[in-house]
Amino acid sequence: MELTYHTDYAFRVLMYAGANPGRRVTLREISEAYGISKEHLRKVVHKLAQEGFLSTAKGRAGGLVLGRDPASIRVGDVVQVMEGSMAIVNCNRQPCPLTGRCALKSVFNRGQRAFLTELNKASLADLLGEERTFSGIRILTEAV
Image (cartoon, rainbow, N blue to C red):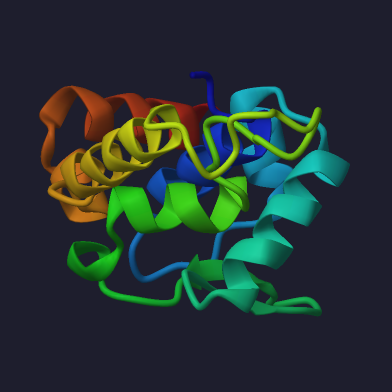
């Protein structure tokens, strides 16, 4: 299973904002730091703000900051929000004659729940608490 770029970018945005507490960071700044298109980031930031992970402001003093305490931003919650459907298999895509009589989907569903449970054991604060992650982001911040 591979997560989408939107999920990857969501974590980059959250970690960047979280590594710069007390100041609003800009889309341009994040875009330049990571080498990601501003338009891609705009969509990601919009979704994160809708879900309360970020707080945004427009205008001269605009930018974005974390909308919640980093300890309350769980990795699995962000993945679920950004990925939308987390279904591993869609039995209805090409109708399967075993639908309703097959144990495979329940196995995948249990695996998915276990995956999200494990991811939710970590928070944004945990990620930022790792010195190598925090210092790497701070280096990016200073380069912009």
